[in-house]
Length: 212
Image 1 (cartoon, rainbow, N blue to C red):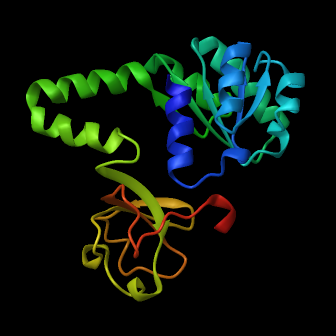
Image 2 (image 1 turned 60 degrees about the horizontal axis):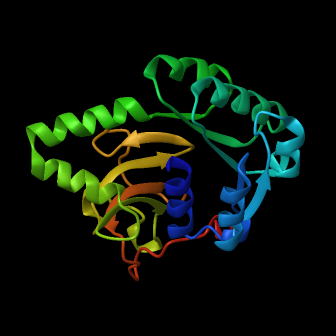
């Protein structure tokens, strides 16, 4: 389920289906991916020969979503050994394994059990807040969190002046919260993390990775 949701989000954000490669040991899942226009590889993702067939050594990003955390560690270690430059995003079930995953080469670690627990707590405290978060997590409708370039007309402005609410600024590959004095005014090389309508808008068109 997590893997399917990740693929759905990638496609919704402009990644061509032909650039998404799914690795799964179950033939039926790969066949389903092929029917959706994705590239599919049947096999064990902990094996280097399988990942080589999936072109992991040439991948820009690798998303690891497995049923077991120990399997995720092996996939991450193998992927990192094959591709030192790829961005590797990993899902783990337990928070205690997040550190191991980072030491294994993951750039970003998402803890599913901890995240679900927080959402459950928020829903109990504030059902309306929970509704907004559920909206943000839904793909293709309502609100979404997106990263985009600073537009030419936005250069020199502060994050507060943009039409869309800004959560953070990416400057020199560093994430800076919108409220930090270090942000100052936006410059051409900056990218912004914004909350916007999931519907594509003229001033915030979704950009595919190859157009970056």
